Length: 419
Image (cartoon, rainbow, N blue to C red; front, side):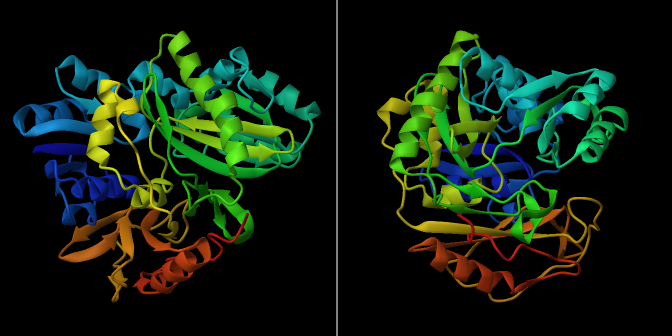
């Protein structure tokens, strides 16, 4: 029996803690900084995910910790796994030189180009005037992406030159996404169906998880601004066995081989954001960690001990473990703060009525203040339900969403409907 430290404080981390709690090999869970939901199952301490010195000191002083799970993108990109490893501690997640596959879109697009991994045609710019010149004659719609990490919001779909100019100004002139927008990618707009495939990777072997579908736009019918994700369902309605084989052979294995060929061995969770087009499946983006809120629907379907899987990824022994999944479908609906993904209030009191026993609530942005549960982020709580199919899971999730109330709360009403 050992203890596990989970770094992060959102819905993804709550789900990871919840899954680890089921392991008979995990004695205790710590979380830095955690949230009000995580605090019900783990011991939380107010140390931020980027406070590396404090995290290292925490691991040193809590000698019962035998594994640290680094869940968010920023600490992975900045080398928290490297720091822990260099000090003799086990950590789950890619090292800095592998996490670049998410931290730099310019890197990942160049990697795909070099190794013939299918993706959208693109141009890269770090000069504002050259980018401006290009978008004036480009074909629309097109997609403008910030090179660096931008909380899932650094992607703007532009319908015309005016919108293209505004996107460039936001990123390159006004630094809306700080340094993430110093370099940008301008990409062809792909038409098709989106699918998310998270995969466990141990450097050589890859085990894809069950397919899922995210909903990025803030409002119904995919309207409004891009968010970190307003809801998910699993399995994908378009991910057939035939498409799965295509993805494994054309995208997943070639990506792992490409990273190894570049001397960037990847261990951890590699997320493939895919677009199923008439011209085959193409990569929209890579993430170097569990997606949020995909994790909230994928991990509830996992039958195998997550602690064992994490250790197999670190040890390079994924091929020795049989990873099994439930057949049930799963739906997650996110309740968000009014105004999200732009400005929103924090500290708004949340009331939760009698939630059905088989519903999972994964907290994203909550905390306790003066003995009351209050909002502490843009995405507040994910309501997750299982069912024999997506329709049943969807019905159960929405029935329980209505039992959670706070001023300004909003959520999409169409999670799980689209194909």
